[in-house]
Length: 327
Image 1 (cartoon, rainbow, N blue to C red):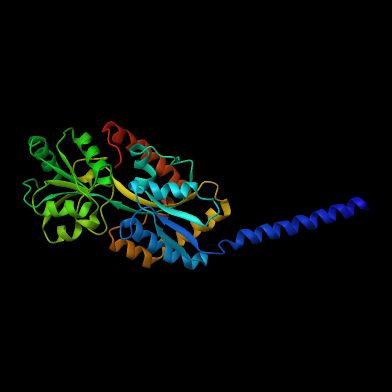
Image 2 (cartoon, rainbow, N blue to C red):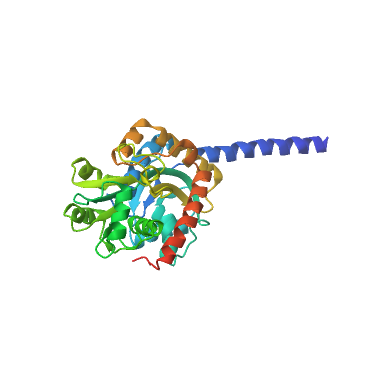
């Protein structure tokens, strides 16, 4: 009889414990969530963070409060998240720079793959190969031929040392087998202004900064650095179609949490992100910025983890071979 009473008591405790822990799991979040953007306000990462966070609030019942922590190519804000408690109340927008390139550009005090939990790939921005309006080449094949014939005077703009456009140009030169001067600018805006003025020959950059000028006929576009065409400008061929197959470059943004964040919390965050990305209003707002939402099968934590590892394997050798360091 005592054994039976003991068994029933233990069973009741187990049920109560299950209800309690289940209740705790279901209760998250119970207060606002800090969303670290490792760049200044107004940039692409900041815009994406605010668009997605606004919609995630509807799913989570609590706001994601954006905090901009800029500096050292995004590594300051990223390091803060790496050191944060993994309780679900600190997450971050991370991207190609913070979670790939910075590992080869800086001596980091954290591990890009071990110290973060991937939640969701949020958006990608394909690059466009463009040139000044007076460039004699009219196709990508002709542009490559012109660059090979004019290595002594050809020039390409980048939006900063170690940034996406700089590394893309390094890979481009490697792929076509020619080197010519790369001119670093403090951002894509000033670089595009010199491209418009004809003071620089070419550039590889995101479409958001060049599409208005392309539509005005002020510069030339040769290819989108992707397997698929750009939704905002479907008339521009892909690099595969234009004669440089396999030259694919995209700047992507993802959502991450510190290492050790509980699985049920990550699942809730991923569910909220998935619902946000499926929202047509969110897709339109991102599309207006020339950003594309990845396919559902490319969005989840496992897909983001695999994608990040592949990007590290692809880009670290390019960065290290050029002996560039973050500024």
